[in-house]
View 1 (cartoon, rainbow, N blue to C red):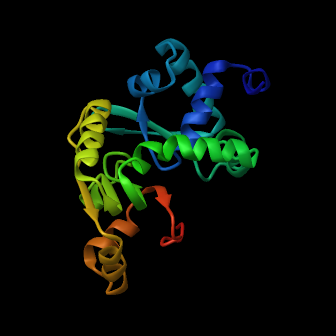
View 2 (tube, helix red, strand yellow):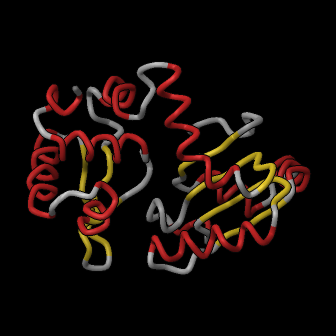
Length: 195
């Protein structure tokens, strides 16, 4: 139904991808792999979305990256439609699908993607995972993610008490991380306020 409403299956898939990953940038070939569509239709729809202002583009290292424009006039209503927040049941299903691999690592209290995922290297890492984590499952998760992303991941894992303590004393690493562009995947205890 969404495809009919928005005129194109590719456009609907692109909107789902962008609105489900609000602080993440993607390049064209990465997008075609993630949404499993032909590159020509992806390019055409990216041009349409760019001309409307729903997405923005930026060049880094000779690659053209696209991400959702959070200042777009209809950002919030479109996010409700495309991030799966239309109904509580749909939202729960969408959230559990994106957090499932992380949940399998153990008791994850907080998971943040930054760095490579947001093209903001100020934090110096790509992933922060806070909680009681199974090391062998973590190793498999990171290996799989490195294959998917085609890059070695820089990650930090720490227990919840350490994170809370470091946040409380205004630890420089935590402060820089929290000020960096990030995508909060899991925040079980509402430790972070969205900036």
